[in-house]
Image 1: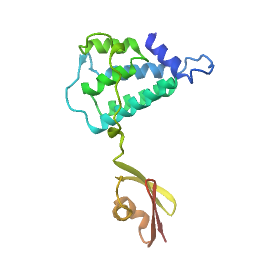
Image 2: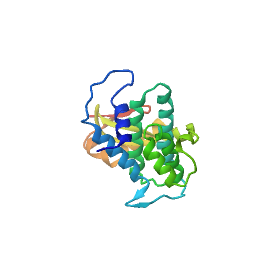
Image 3: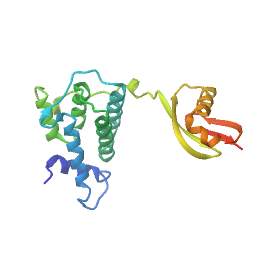
Image 4: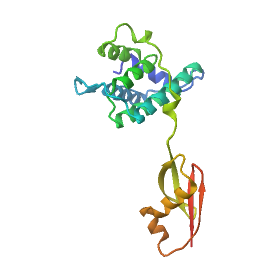
Length: 210
């Protein structure tokens, strides 16, 4: 019903490889859907739909975050957390509608030890000579993993009301000014006075009103 790659992935996804686990196929559909979603990154219907375009920062960040995670997990035999990382990456690339060969070629090589049959098929389809298992393992670049923005929780009198992103190097003064000027803050400050604004770096902004 599912194929060898689905079974292979599911067995790794069940938990740490050194632990005994009860056999249960209830979650195997989710792994099968992941493989189909991965396949659909390469195809638009029945047609191969890849481009030679330059990857965006978001696409490169998603890919290199995955490569770093999987490279470390393989060393420690933590295959179950690798499968989770693959699911996150494929979801992100699907949302970004990524069809860049530069990204997807490396994604195939990274997934090949886990799902060799589907990766071998795609590797050949993309015109590569030889087996994907002999391809050079991709290296991650820390430059692509640097966070440029920070997501702050904006609270009023200690109650979270919304979230707002700021550049990672934004000053407390800038953050305070933008929070107070944000239209979403208006209803929580209406008819009240701002006593003080507390900025916890890279975490939360709390506006005290009365």
